[in-house]
Length: 168
Image 1 (cartoon, rainbow, N blue to C red):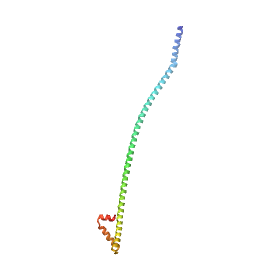
Image 2 (image 1 turned 180 degrees about the vertical axis):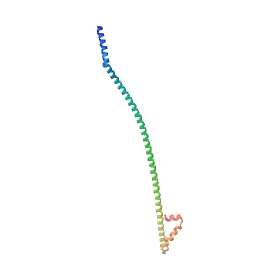
Image 3 (image 1 turned 180 degrees about the horizontal axis):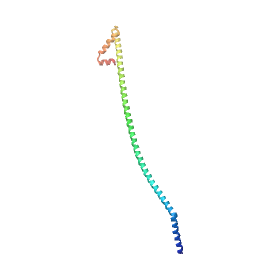
Image 4 (image 1 turned 90 degrees about the vertical axis):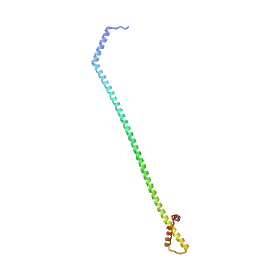
């Protein structure tokens, strides 16, 4: 089976210790330095990642605040726009009402003027017809001026309800 050779075991142990001493002096320090450098790089990366996460959270919070402010500004602008549009609508309605009232008053004035002119024309024609009828009935020739004066006097002396019948 297996036999343990004490000489071989001692030499293996001595070589192993020697190898550890040689590696400790030559390779162990650079290996530990490399591990420390790697550990420091990983720690720095973790710190930077943590800082980046904190910055990202801060930026998200700032963006959220800016978004809220922008939404408030938009809502304010919309309110102001609605108020302006409503004021413009009211102004236009008032202007249209004023224009309609002015046009209505002007139309009433024109109607009144035309009515007065028609009444004067009807009176003149009625007077002319009355003069003509009277001159035919009386068979006498009065001058037209005199006849017109008589008829106008008669029309002026009539009560208002007869006058509207004559003019109508």
